[in-house]
Amino acid sequence: MTTSEDRPRQDARQDPPREDAPVLDARDIVKRFTGVLALDRVSLSLRPGEVHALVGENGAGKSTLIKVITGVYRPDDGEVRLAGRPARFTGPLDAGRAGVQAVHQEIGLVPDLSVARNLLLGREPRRAFGLLDARRMHETAARTLAAYGVRVDVRLPLRSLGVGAQQMVALARAVSVDARVVIMDEPTSSLEPREVDTLFGVIDRLRDQGIAVVYVSHRLDELYRICDGVTVLRDGRVVHQGTLADLNRIHLVSLMLGRDVAQVRAEGVTRFSGAHEASAGPPVLEAYGLSSRHLLDGVSLTVRPREVVGLGGLLGAGRTETAKAIAGVLPLDAGRVTVAGLRVRRGSATAAVRAGIALLPEDRKAEGIVPTLSVRDNIALAALPRLARGGLVSDARIDRIVDTFMKRLRIKATGPHQPVAELSGGNQQKVLLARWMATEPKVLLLDEPTRGIDVGAKAEVQALVDELAEAGLAVLLISSDLEELVEGSDRVVVLKNGAVVGELIGDELTEEGVMTTIAAEVQ
Image 1: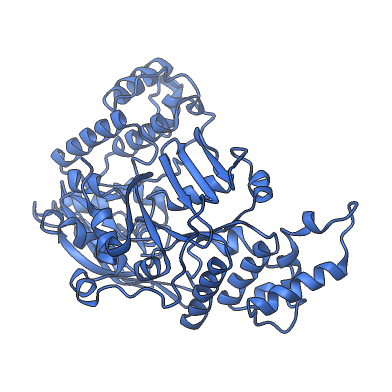
Image 2: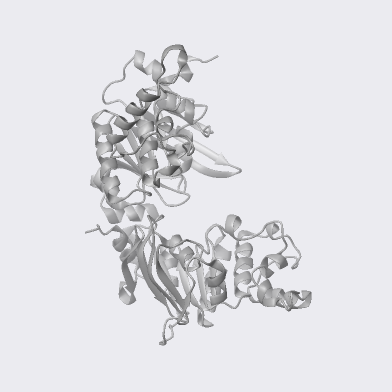
């Protein structure tokens, strides 16, 4: 049976809240996953008509908090209150019925249904005997979407629209069901500039109507343009809450990255004692004008032998996408990549590997190791084509290569036949490095190589990267750890919104310099 506690919106309307009272109040939320504390006493309060920025780097807890608020997860402690009353949603549909709507990057509509049916699904106008009133449905849908700058034939399947238009349909649906709170998760990631302006106009109307908006984005210019308040999460904790206008950009970036500006200035910069000097010869890696719609906008960079070039920027700035584009994994609309002067076929991972490009992905579990295979088989995977003779691969050759790299990278395992899933995170990372080193690469792309491993293993991986550069490799290093990025790189190319916004070298290459470049306002 449904209780009054399960119907927070209806109860709240019987006893209207004060105008200054929070419409949504998440109090001291705690959420654990298999021993990992994802949210540690996180609170978020929204007032009617407030546009509130929720920001933080990867793993900060933003998605988990949204899922708790919308009923995907039950909190282990704490509570969510809507209009002053406890709200225990059983899922997003239940939350939506109560007036809490979320619009995600993954649009979550039905692509084979018409635009009109997607917009009005479950609320289609009916005639006598429950028959669908198609004409009224189409008229209502067209009129509603026109207010969002979307003018299309609403009878067409949703999949016939561009991604940006689909995003606007999802937003229009969320707002049109009597919402009190709308959560927008990276809403502009698929929008053109004109569509972004339309979206901000919609948000202004929501503000005027007293609807609270949670705005999740890594784009600082958007945050300062549209948001009133801000909550900064880091490692599952709230590190700052307040009025966004009172927080300057560099301090916002420093809070997100966990680096105090004053402390950075006081400490100065300490480079690796074994800093390597790049070859004075031509670059081994050259990337020019890499562009992919909504992801990369004309990214260009070079890396010489024995040089480590860092990629700086916040989550979503285009760092991972740049590495994947160079490695042929991300399809490109424009741009070219050359290795040792030879052009690499665009969008071909196989061609990139043959050219000497090796990518160590950010998510080693999802995109790297094969947990069901042994250490030996994981190392040998990428090198098999090179080791084959007449279609056959010698076990003895594989054993020699595996033994060589297990010793060289100091991989701690009971032996080459131990399942890789049994190894520590740091040793799994070394197995991936060994796999790509076995292909004898010229260019090594490292995406967050020390994320999720302990301090000792982190130091070992950093030392290995330094050794590989000394041995002549061209290394592109992506790291969210500012200290690691600055200390481990000879130059740092800073990305923002998929474009290069600065390059730091020499005395300019400091943590404060990187943060200042990230925080600089787009002119």
